[in-house]
Length: 126
Image 1 (spheres, rainbow, N blue to C red):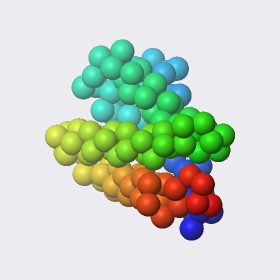
Image 2: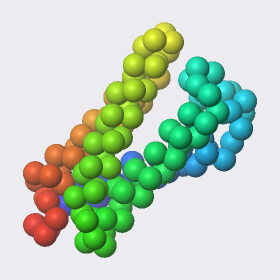
Image 3: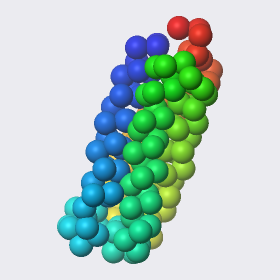
C-alpha cells in the first residue's frame, strides 16, 4: 500500500508542479489557449493558483520523505482536493463538462493520498 501511495503522490506532484509552473511563468494570454478558465481571473489570481499548486506539489513529497512535519503531506493533498473542487465549480459554471473528468480523477487521487497518509500508512508505520 505504501508503494501505491508514493506512486500517486509522485504523479500528483508532477502534474500539479508542471501545471502550477506554467501558470506562474506564462503570460495569462498564452495560458488562455490551453487553460480557458484564465479568462475569468486576473493575472495575479492565476499566478496565485499556480503558486499554490507548486507548493502543494512540494508538500506532497518533501515532508513525508524527510520526516520533517510529515503531517504536511496529507494536508497538501487536502489543499489539492479543495483546488479541484474549485476547478469543478469553474468548469460547471463555464459549461466545460469534458474537463470535469480530469478534475474528478485528480480529486480522487488526492483523496487516496489523504486516506493513505492519515489512515492506511501514516508516517512511521511504513
